Length: 185
Length: 179
Image (cartoon, rainbow over all chains, first blue to last red):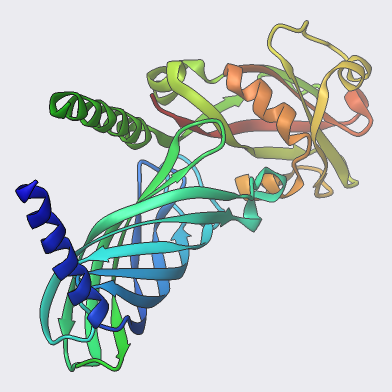
Protein backbone atom coordinates (compact mmCIF):
# COMPACT_ATOMS: atom_id res chain seq x y z
CA UNK A 1 0.00 0.00 0.00
CA UNK A 2 2.81 2.33 0.98
CA UNK A 3 4.63 1.43 -2.24
CA UNK A 4 1.52 2.24 -4.28
CA UNK A 5 1.17 5.63 -2.59
CA UNK A 6 4.78 6.46 -3.38
CA UNK A 7 4.26 5.54 -7.05
CA UNK A 8 1.07 7.60 -7.23
CA UNK A 9 2.84 10.51 -5.61
CA UNK A 10 5.70 10.40 -8.13
CA UNK A 11 3.18 10.20 -11.00
CA UNK A 12 1.28 13.17 -9.64
CA UNK A 13 4.43 15.24 -9.28
CA UNK A 14 5.57 14.34 -12.81
CA UNK A 15 2.19 15.09 -14.32
CA UNK A 16 2.00 18.43 -12.51
CA UNK A 17 5.45 19.38 -13.74
CA UNK A 18 4.55 18.32 -17.29
CA UNK A 19 1.25 20.14 -17.33
CA UNK A 20 2.92 23.28 -15.97
CA UNK A 21 4.93 23.56 -19.18
CA UNK A 22 2.87 24.66 -22.17
CA UNK A 23 3.22 22.65 -25.39
CA UNK A 24 5.78 24.16 -27.72
CA UNK A 25 5.49 24.45 -31.49
CA UNK A 26 8.06 24.46 -34.22
CA UNK A 27 8.72 23.79 -37.88
CA UNK A 28 11.63 22.23 -39.70
CA UNK A 29 13.01 21.44 -43.10
CA UNK A 30 15.73 18.97 -44.07
CA UNK A 31 17.41 17.69 -47.18
CA UNK A 32 19.85 14.93 -47.87
CA UNK A 33 20.45 11.61 -49.49
CA UNK A 34 18.37 8.44 -49.53
CA UNK A 35 20.24 5.22 -50.20
CA UNK A 36 18.20 2.18 -51.27
CA UNK A 37 18.99 -1.06 -49.46
CA UNK A 38 18.69 -4.34 -51.40
CA UNK A 39 16.89 -2.57 -54.26
CA UNK A 40 18.73 -3.35 -57.47
CA UNK A 41 16.33 -1.25 -59.53
CA UNK A 42 17.08 2.04 -57.75
CA UNK A 43 20.21 3.99 -56.90
CA UNK A 44 20.88 6.69 -54.31
CA UNK A 45 18.85 9.85 -54.69
CA UNK A 46 17.73 12.93 -52.83
CA UNK A 47 15.19 13.45 -50.06
CA UNK A 48 13.47 16.60 -48.78
CA UNK A 49 11.43 16.58 -45.62
CA UNK A 50 9.13 19.21 -44.13
CA UNK A 51 7.86 18.82 -40.59
CA UNK A 52 5.89 20.51 -37.88
CA UNK A 53 7.00 19.92 -34.31
CA UNK A 54 4.88 19.70 -31.21
CA UNK A 55 6.56 19.17 -27.86
CA UNK A 56 4.03 17.27 -25.81
CA UNK A 57 6.31 16.16 -22.96
CA UNK A 58 9.70 17.49 -21.88
CA UNK A 59 11.56 14.83 -23.84
CA UNK A 60 8.93 13.72 -26.38
CA UNK A 61 8.00 15.58 -29.56
CA UNK A 62 5.46 14.67 -32.19
CA UNK A 63 6.32 15.60 -35.75
CA UNK A 64 3.76 15.43 -38.58
CA UNK A 65 5.88 15.25 -41.73
CA UNK A 66 5.78 15.37 -45.51
CA UNK A 67 8.68 14.18 -47.63
CA UNK A 68 9.71 13.64 -51.21
CA UNK A 69 12.38 11.19 -52.37
CA UNK A 70 13.74 10.92 -55.90
CA UNK A 71 15.92 7.91 -56.55
CA UNK A 72 18.54 7.69 -59.26
CA UNK A 73 18.79 5.13 -62.04
CA UNK A 74 21.14 2.20 -61.42
CA UNK A 75 23.96 1.23 -63.74
CA UNK A 76 24.20 -2.30 -65.07
CA UNK A 77 27.32 -3.49 -66.84
CA UNK A 78 25.38 -5.74 -69.22
CA UNK A 79 22.69 -3.36 -70.46
CA UNK A 80 21.35 0.17 -70.43
CA UNK A 81 18.70 0.58 -67.74
CA UNK A 82 17.36 3.68 -69.48
CA UNK A 83 14.62 4.67 -67.05
CA UNK A 84 14.67 7.11 -64.12
CA UNK A 85 14.48 6.04 -60.50
CA UNK A 86 11.17 6.14 -58.69
CA UNK A 87 9.72 9.13 -56.89
CA UNK A 88 8.31 8.65 -53.40
CA UNK A 89 5.94 11.11 -51.78
CA UNK A 90 4.84 10.42 -48.27
CA UNK A 91 3.21 11.77 -45.16
CA UNK A 92 3.24 10.50 -41.63
CA UNK A 93 3.96 11.12 -38.00
CA UNK A 94 7.30 10.83 -36.20
CA UNK A 95 7.95 10.85 -32.49
CA UNK A 96 11.31 11.88 -31.12
CA UNK A 97 12.73 11.04 -27.74
CA UNK A 98 15.30 13.47 -26.35
CA UNK A 99 14.95 16.29 -28.86
CA UNK A 100 13.95 19.17 -26.59
CA UNK A 101 13.32 21.95 -29.04
CA UNK A 102 13.66 25.49 -27.87
CA UNK A 103 16.73 24.72 -25.78
CA UNK A 104 20.35 25.46 -26.50
CA UNK A 105 23.08 22.86 -26.62
CA UNK A 106 23.64 19.51 -28.26
CA UNK A 107 20.73 17.09 -28.01
CA UNK A 108 21.05 13.52 -29.31
CA UNK A 109 17.68 11.85 -29.86
CA UNK A 110 15.87 8.78 -31.12
CA UNK A 111 13.20 9.07 -33.80
CA UNK A 112 10.54 6.60 -34.94
CA UNK A 113 7.46 7.05 -37.08
CA UNK A 114 4.75 5.65 -39.29
CA UNK A 115 3.43 6.87 -42.60
CA UNK A 116 2.02 6.31 -46.06
CA UNK A 117 4.41 6.06 -48.99
CA UNK A 118 3.37 6.53 -52.63
CA UNK A 119 5.87 5.43 -55.26
CA UNK A 120 5.50 6.51 -58.89
CA UNK A 121 7.62 6.15 -61.99
CA UNK A 122 6.22 7.44 -65.28
CA UNK A 123 8.95 5.61 -67.21
CA UNK A 124 7.44 2.26 -66.22
CA UNK A 125 4.33 2.94 -68.30
CA UNK A 126 1.61 0.37 -67.63
CA UNK A 127 4.03 -1.52 -65.33
CA UNK A 128 3.92 1.37 -62.82
CA UNK A 129 2.30 -0.10 -59.75
CA UNK A 130 1.14 3.15 -58.17
CA UNK A 131 -0.52 3.03 -54.79
CA UNK A 132 -0.09 4.26 -51.25
CA UNK A 133 1.59 1.79 -48.95
CA UNK A 134 2.07 1.68 -45.22
CA UNK A 135 5.54 1.94 -43.80
CA UNK A 136 7.65 2.89 -40.86
CA UNK A 137 10.94 4.53 -40.06
CA UNK A 138 13.34 4.68 -37.18
CA UNK A 139 16.75 6.06 -36.40
CA UNK A 140 18.84 8.53 -34.48
CA UNK A 141 19.47 12.24 -34.73
CA UNK A 142 21.35 15.14 -33.29
CA UNK A 143 19.97 18.63 -32.72
CA UNK A 144 22.34 21.50 -32.05
CA UNK A 145 20.65 24.58 -30.62
CA UNK A 146 22.25 27.51 -32.42
CA UNK A 147 19.96 29.98 -30.67
CA UNK A 148 16.97 29.37 -28.37
CA UNK A 149 14.77 29.37 -31.48
CA UNK A 150 16.92 27.80 -34.16
CA UNK A 151 18.52 24.36 -34.15
CA UNK A 152 20.61 22.49 -36.69
CA UNK A 153 19.17 19.00 -37.10
CA UNK A 154 20.84 15.90 -38.57
CA UNK A 155 19.14 12.52 -38.77
CA UNK A 156 19.79 9.03 -40.01
CA UNK A 157 16.67 6.93 -40.51
CA UNK A 158 15.84 3.53 -41.94
CA UNK A 159 12.64 3.58 -44.01
CA UNK A 160 10.80 0.26 -44.46
CA UNK A 161 7.77 0.16 -46.77
CA UNK A 162 5.43 -2.76 -47.22
CA UNK A 163 4.89 -4.17 -50.72
CA UNK A 164 1.76 -5.87 -52.07
CA UNK A 165 2.33 -9.61 -52.23
CA UNK A 166 4.92 -9.56 -49.43
CA UNK A 167 8.39 -8.22 -48.90
CA UNK A 168 9.38 -4.65 -48.40
CA UNK A 169 11.37 -1.75 -49.79
CA UNK A 170 14.09 -0.37 -47.57
CA UNK A 171 16.26 2.72 -47.67
CA UNK A 172 18.58 4.69 -45.43
CA UNK A 173 17.92 8.44 -45.33
CA UNK A 174 20.62 10.81 -44.09
CA UNK A 175 19.40 14.39 -43.76
CA UNK A 176 20.46 17.72 -42.38
CA UNK A 177 18.37 20.84 -41.87
CA UNK A 178 17.08 23.53 -39.59
CA UNK A 179 14.28 23.69 -37.04
CA UNK A 180 12.60 26.85 -35.83
CA UNK A 181 10.86 26.87 -32.48
CA UNK A 182 8.19 29.44 -31.74
CA UNK A 183 8.85 30.86 -28.29
CA UNK A 184 12.06 29.06 -27.38
CA UNK A 185 13.72 29.91 -24.09
CA UNK B 1 1.97 -13.00 -12.48
CA UNK B 2 5.19 -11.09 -13.08
CA UNK B 3 6.75 -14.18 -14.62
CA UNK B 4 3.77 -14.57 -16.98
CA UNK B 5 3.94 -10.92 -18.03
CA UNK B 6 7.64 -11.32 -18.80
CA UNK B 7 6.95 -14.39 -20.93
CA UNK B 8 4.21 -12.58 -22.88
CA UNK B 9 6.50 -9.58 -23.40
CA UNK B 10 9.32 -11.84 -24.56
CA UNK B 11 6.98 -13.63 -26.97
CA UNK B 12 5.72 -10.29 -28.32
CA UNK B 13 9.28 -9.08 -28.77
CA UNK B 14 10.14 -12.30 -30.60
CA UNK B 15 7.17 -11.90 -32.97
CA UNK B 16 8.07 -8.25 -33.70
CA UNK B 17 11.73 -9.21 -34.26
CA UNK B 18 10.82 -12.04 -36.62
CA UNK B 19 8.40 -9.82 -38.58
CA UNK B 20 11.01 -7.10 -38.86
CA UNK B 21 13.66 -9.65 -39.86
CA UNK B 22 11.32 -10.93 -42.60
CA UNK B 23 10.97 -7.41 -43.93
CA UNK B 24 14.67 -6.71 -43.66
CA UNK B 25 15.65 -9.95 -45.44
CA UNK B 26 13.59 -9.25 -48.56
CA UNK B 27 15.01 -7.43 -51.55
CA UNK B 28 14.33 -6.31 -55.11
CA UNK B 29 16.45 -7.94 -57.80
CA UNK B 30 16.96 -7.49 -61.54
CA UNK B 31 17.76 -10.37 -63.89
CA UNK B 32 18.47 -10.14 -67.58
CA UNK B 33 18.39 -12.95 -70.12
CA UNK B 34 19.67 -12.47 -73.63
CA UNK B 35 19.05 -14.67 -76.63
CA UNK B 36 19.43 -14.51 -80.38
CA UNK B 37 18.00 -16.34 -83.36
CA UNK B 38 19.70 -18.52 -85.88
CA UNK B 39 17.08 -18.06 -88.59
CA UNK B 40 15.64 -15.04 -90.35
CA UNK B 41 12.28 -16.17 -91.59
CA UNK B 42 10.14 -13.25 -90.45
CA UNK B 43 8.64 -15.37 -87.69
CA UNK B 44 10.61 -15.87 -84.50
CA UNK B 45 10.09 -18.13 -81.55
CA UNK B 46 12.22 -18.73 -78.48
CA UNK B 47 11.59 -20.49 -75.17
CA UNK B 48 12.80 -17.97 -72.62
CA UNK B 49 14.20 -19.61 -69.49
CA UNK B 50 15.49 -17.23 -66.85
CA UNK B 51 15.52 -20.01 -64.24
CA UNK B 52 19.09 -20.74 -65.30
CA UNK B 53 20.34 -17.27 -64.36
CA UNK B 54 22.32 -17.02 -61.14
CA UNK B 55 20.13 -14.40 -59.45
CA UNK B 56 16.92 -16.27 -60.25
CA UNK B 57 18.36 -19.59 -59.05
CA UNK B 58 19.41 -17.95 -55.81
CA UNK B 59 15.96 -16.54 -55.02
CA UNK B 60 13.46 -18.69 -56.94
CA UNK B 61 12.08 -20.34 -53.79
CA UNK B 62 11.30 -16.95 -52.21
CA UNK B 63 9.91 -14.88 -55.09
CA UNK B 64 7.03 -12.82 -53.74
CA UNK B 65 6.10 -10.75 -56.76
CA UNK B 66 7.18 -9.74 -60.24
CA UNK B 67 7.59 -5.97 -60.29
CA UNK B 68 8.49 -5.15 -63.88
CA UNK B 69 9.16 -7.03 -67.13
CA UNK B 70 10.71 -5.26 -70.10
CA UNK B 71 12.61 -6.04 -73.29
CA UNK B 72 15.59 -4.74 -75.17
CA UNK B 73 15.71 -5.71 -78.86
CA UNK B 74 17.90 -5.26 -81.89
CA UNK B 75 16.12 -5.65 -85.23
CA UNK B 76 17.01 -5.11 -88.85
CA UNK B 77 14.50 -4.23 -91.54
CA UNK B 78 15.51 -5.70 -94.88
CA UNK B 79 12.63 -4.13 -96.80
CA UNK B 80 12.45 -0.71 -98.41
CA UNK B 81 9.35 0.32 -96.47
CA UNK B 82 8.70 0.83 -92.74
CA UNK B 83 7.18 -2.12 -90.94
CA UNK B 84 5.69 -2.78 -87.53
CA UNK B 85 6.84 -5.46 -85.14
CA UNK B 86 4.79 -7.31 -82.52
CA UNK B 87 5.69 -9.52 -79.55
CA UNK B 88 3.49 -12.27 -78.12
CA UNK B 89 4.05 -14.38 -74.99
CA UNK B 90 2.56 -17.70 -73.98
CA UNK B 91 2.79 -20.07 -71.00
CA UNK B 92 5.69 -22.50 -71.19
CA UNK B 93 3.34 -25.50 -70.91
CA UNK B 94 1.45 -24.49 -74.06
CA UNK B 95 2.43 -25.99 -77.45
CA UNK B 96 4.85 -24.18 -79.72
CA UNK B 97 3.09 -22.55 -82.69
CA UNK B 98 4.79 -22.28 -86.04
CA UNK B 99 2.67 -19.70 -87.82
CA UNK B 100 1.39 -16.19 -87.22
CA UNK B 101 -2.31 -17.16 -87.27
CA UNK B 102 -1.95 -19.69 -84.42
CA UNK B 103 0.15 -17.26 -82.38
CA UNK B 104 -2.39 -14.49 -82.87
CA UNK B 105 -5.25 -16.82 -81.89
CA UNK B 106 -3.64 -18.43 -78.84
CA UNK B 107 -0.80 -16.34 -77.43
CA UNK B 108 -1.07 -12.93 -75.74
CA UNK B 109 0.18 -9.82 -77.46
CA UNK B 110 2.39 -7.74 -75.14
CA UNK B 111 4.02 -5.29 -77.55
CA UNK B 112 2.47 -4.02 -80.72
CA UNK B 113 3.30 -1.71 -83.55
CA UNK B 114 6.95 -1.10 -82.77
CA UNK B 115 8.09 0.71 -85.89
CA UNK B 116 11.10 -0.62 -87.77
CA UNK B 117 12.66 2.12 -89.89
CA UNK B 118 12.62 1.62 -93.65
CA UNK B 119 15.53 -0.39 -95.03
CA UNK B 120 16.96 -2.29 -96.53
CA UNK B 121 19.47 -3.11 -93.81
CA UNK B 122 18.34 -0.44 -91.32
CA UNK B 123 18.90 -1.44 -87.68
CA UNK B 124 16.43 -0.50 -84.93
CA UNK B 125 17.36 -0.66 -81.27
CA UNK B 126 14.35 -0.89 -78.96
CA UNK B 127 15.60 0.03 -75.50
CA UNK B 128 14.23 -1.25 -72.20
CA UNK B 129 12.56 2.11 -71.53
CA UNK B 130 11.00 2.22 -75.01
CA UNK B 131 9.54 -1.27 -74.54
CA UNK B 132 7.99 -0.27 -71.19
CA UNK B 133 6.28 2.70 -72.77
CA UNK B 134 4.46 0.43 -75.24
CA UNK B 135 3.84 -2.70 -73.22
CA UNK B 136 0.33 -4.06 -72.64
CA UNK B 137 -1.39 -6.97 -70.87
CA UNK B 138 0.82 -6.28 -67.87
CA UNK B 139 -0.79 -8.75 -65.46
CA UNK B 140 -0.42 -11.57 -67.98
CA UNK B 141 3.26 -10.75 -68.51
CA UNK B 142 3.87 -10.81 -64.76
CA UNK B 143 2.04 -14.13 -64.45
CA UNK B 144 4.08 -15.91 -67.14
CA UNK B 145 7.31 -14.30 -65.93
CA UNK B 146 6.76 -15.61 -62.41
CA UNK B 147 7.24 -19.16 -63.72
CA UNK B 148 10.60 -18.11 -65.17
CA UNK B 149 9.89 -19.87 -68.50
CA UNK B 150 7.65 -18.70 -71.34
CA UNK B 151 7.30 -18.71 -75.13
CA UNK B 152 8.44 -15.56 -76.90
CA UNK B 153 7.10 -14.91 -80.40
CA UNK B 154 8.26 -12.04 -82.57
CA UNK B 155 6.36 -11.28 -85.77
CA UNK B 156 5.96 -8.36 -88.12
CA UNK B 157 2.75 -7.24 -89.72
CA UNK B 158 2.41 -9.58 -92.67
CA UNK B 159 3.95 -12.49 -90.79
CA UNK B 160 6.36 -14.70 -92.68
CA UNK B 161 5.93 -12.69 -95.87
CA UNK B 162 8.04 -9.84 -94.57
CA UNK B 163 11.80 -9.71 -94.57
CA UNK B 164 13.34 -8.57 -91.33
CA UNK B 165 15.79 -9.94 -88.77
CA UNK B 166 15.50 -10.05 -85.01
CA UNK B 167 19.18 -9.97 -84.19
CA UNK B 168 18.84 -10.44 -80.45
CA UNK B 169 16.47 -9.90 -77.54
CA UNK B 170 17.11 -9.26 -73.86
CA UNK B 171 14.38 -9.91 -71.29
CA UNK B 172 14.78 -7.84 -68.11
CA UNK B 173 12.78 -8.90 -65.04
CA UNK B 174 12.61 -7.05 -61.73
CA UNK B 175 11.24 -9.08 -58.84
CA UNK B 176 10.88 -8.96 -55.07
CA UNK B 177 12.00 -11.94 -53.06
CA UNK B 178 12.52 -12.68 -49.42
CA UNK B 179 11.57 -14.91 -46.56
